Image (cartoon, rainbow, N blue to C red; front, side, top):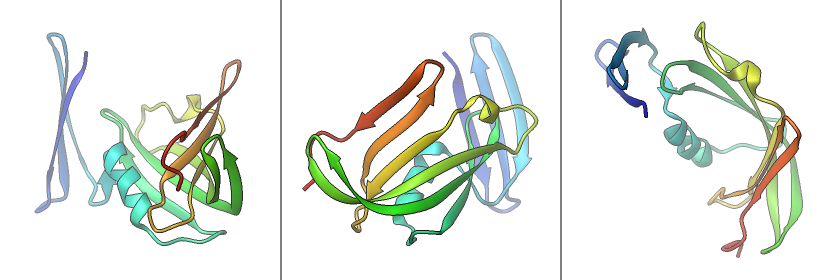
Length: 143
């Protein structure tokens, strides 16, 4: 178990981070006015207006490393899910390390589809893994 606490000071745009794993405590700071945790970044991305051909960029903090998340909106298409057909944006996420350590190099190719309506609901994700791919898709609530 790793407990991570990250506190942002807007006055100096500095993050103070404490990570505790058992008795081991690590503390560090970094300056960044535009860094989000993964959950906040996901919600923010869903509120942004975009169209095919756009690229969204967000800085994301994953507990000990910072990343640049690039979301390339590559297509608008109608996809078939078990729950029905729906219009969606096809998005290719890319991750780049912004700090010296990080897992961006370990990640493989992924594709995300979100609804093309104002809700921008996550519908489907396909991610390459060591032996094939993992697919996650919404099974209820398409309509």
